[in-house]
Length: 288
Image (cartoon, rainbow, N blue to C red; front, side):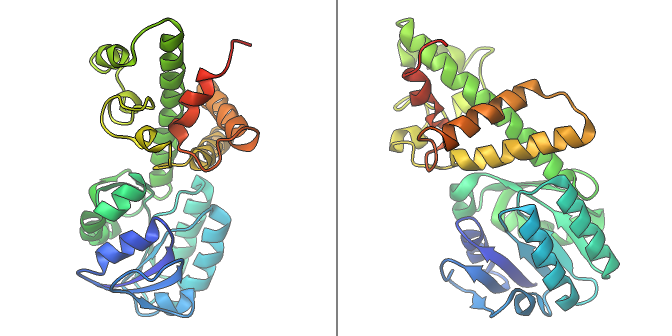
């Protein structure tokens, strides 16, 4: 396939580089020059004549602006594959605009972080027409290890938002529990050995433990240098609350997690740290 790739940042650049090993990729908007890519002078130029145009952008407003630029430049029947994490409303609006322009659209946000982008082990949650999903599925296989078709347009974003709301809540609970265990005199390794094989097990404990030196290697073992930054978790939790308000859903734990990460990022020293750095935060706090 001929692929246009717009948004070659920390995630997009390695994703595009992996695709360029077996496809022709024309890129735009880069902080680097990924190997194997031809760089265009504009988003529209990168989209011209492409079979699939992939976008990896920071938010819904930017996605809408880029879509307005690239859709008129794309050839009939091409697919706009958006891998950004944005609000559901923006994803569905862009899909409707693509359809009106004679295109197809898939919203497919990712899970797996920078390491997953580099190693080609991302998980994609996709919304959009089944036929378009089938066309881009081989690209998912290059960039990741799993792709799930979640239904119509916007459902990929819905799945990502719900997944990351769970992640944000469980990481806070994990950090609270380890800090409590410390103050109760419980050895962290013993804590991990019990919880990781008991009813408290979760991805936050078993695969991404926030306690340094415990469990598989995680950002906690690297001074909480982010694999998934706290400000990105805050972004996703904000999206979850936007979605909850739009459909009148009661999400008290998601709201509480959003507020805690907002305080951590905006008022404390959480910006630029991994989202699991909530553990040292709780270690130093007393009951209020």
